[in-house]
Amino acid sequence: MKLSSIRLHNVAVPLVTPFETSFMRETEKECYLIEATFDTDSGQVTGWGESVAMSAPLYSSEYVEGGIDVTRRWIAPILFDVENLRAERVAWHLRHIIGHQMAKAAMEMAVLDAQLQVAGLSFKDYLGGVTDTVPSGVSVGMQDSIPELLKVIGGYMEEGYARIKLKIKPGKDIEPVAAVRKEFGDDFLFQVDANAAYTLVDAAHLKKLDDYGLLLIEQPLGEADIRQHALLAKQMSTPMCLDESIVSAEAAADAISLGAADVINIKPGRVGGYLEAKKIHDLASAHGVAVWHGGMLELGIGRAANAAMASLPGFTLPGDISGSKRFFHEDITEEIVQHDGVVDVPTGPGFGVTVNRETLAKFTRDTIDITPQK
Image (cartoon, rainbow, N blue to C red; front, top):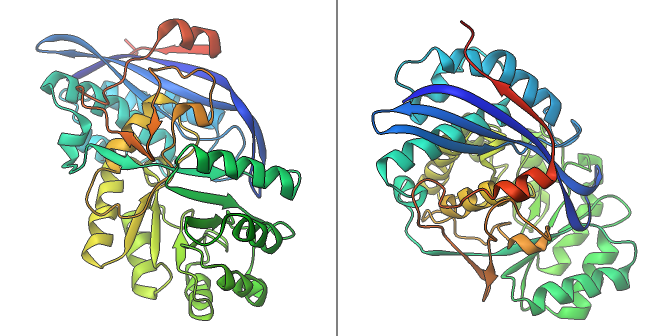
């Protein structure tokens, strides 16, 4: 395949309800999509990618405008010069660009989507997925009050979600967790996510969460604090899960060897793409470490790809792969539906979903066309 043109779509899709974490409150999903056109032996093919970078550099150092800039100025020119572009070599071609994992992942997605369409192969089959459905968990942001939180979680439990994840931060942790357990009991999978909001000084406070039978606690300490997570893990009975700290397979290997991760949350965008994410899955499986698939409020393209990734055998815990309606009144692809606590893995070629041009246009703020320089 030869990359012939790229169009970046900067979109903003309103959320059904605001989503609040320890570091920001979102009312819309802002991201950019990559529409890449390739010349192939069977004609032109279009592949789609979705960046998970957020509007501000608060979850990671990356952000939407930065991803657009690095794609336009560096990623695209490098890949335009490749005569036979393959997804398996995208990371190698981009190796001299330091960081920008989410931008690289979005570009790799577009190449993968087109490559698999040409081959008539689904992403699930390409990866070696083993299930046709994946358990669907839901991530619940912080609410204004305990009664409101209980109402929201009760609604998701009625919808049949297989697991509840609650965002926490100092001042909004023990009380809401206790209230949820009191209201709904112990017979459901319940975990919490701190998004690096604490330090090791808070160990005694965090240990109080051990009383509530949580599936895991996700990333309580800073991204660089792998050693401190290992120390905290020794003080808590709640399994320790790492998210932001796992930026590569090498980082995952370090965390496992130090005893910092009983569980790993795999987010392909955070680690540079789905192929690197599969390496982490394989590494964790080889060491008996459970993995689950995280979410970044993806639109239909990313949500479909996530479902295929989560069909691999090492994903033994429910992930944040909820139905489209959890976050959006309208998606830019056909709706990803949660039913009976699961999401179906798309079976069509590529990622198995189709972008609705009309809906995409409705939510597009800007488009940028990139072509090879003569």
